[in-house]
Image 1 (spheres, one colour):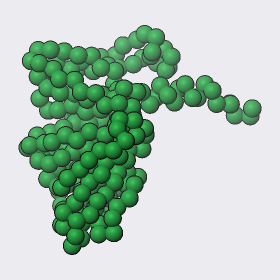
Image 2 (cartoon, one colour):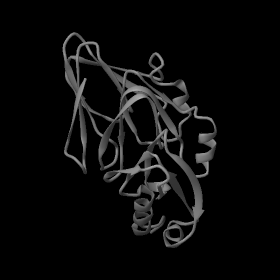
Image 3 (cartoon, rainbow, N blue to C red):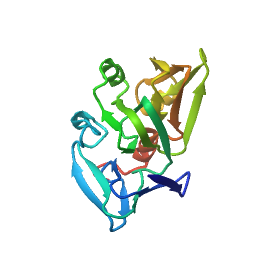
Length: 225
């Protein structure tokens, strides 16, 4: 399988080229188009690639689309639902955690699982549903706005607002703290931040969807006007 990105970084397309028999799964709604040599099948699981527990996810669909090149090579183009970027992450018998809505697609060999034990309940307070991408292959994650990477050395820490968090690897440590301040007051209520400590890598998006919704809501006419 080969892939390329176009229209980066604001309106990124993911174009995947599949050899005969190769397949990739993606979120419903992510498809832009595919060649006639590619078939599509919708389901809730695919031989262990996608756990049926995905249906428990709040931000991810209970269904996925599987695209397979039949007889000849073919291409599939995907795009995230919001304006922003897409990144590929290669896993080698590793785990990448993503927040709800950040998973776009994955190749064979990666299991997509929401059963991550205490992590799920721990993130519940932050209104985040964790998704664990496990195995060997390529995972594609998307962001609202640009997608930035934080590389932390052993013992190095960085604090990140939960509304900007996209993903983190399984080597990094983190804690969640409740904070106050101007931003949380504007958005109504207290906010939450993640403190990450290396070694490891975290990914974040440069824009906050909830903040955009809040700004737009103040400009919309109220009911009855």
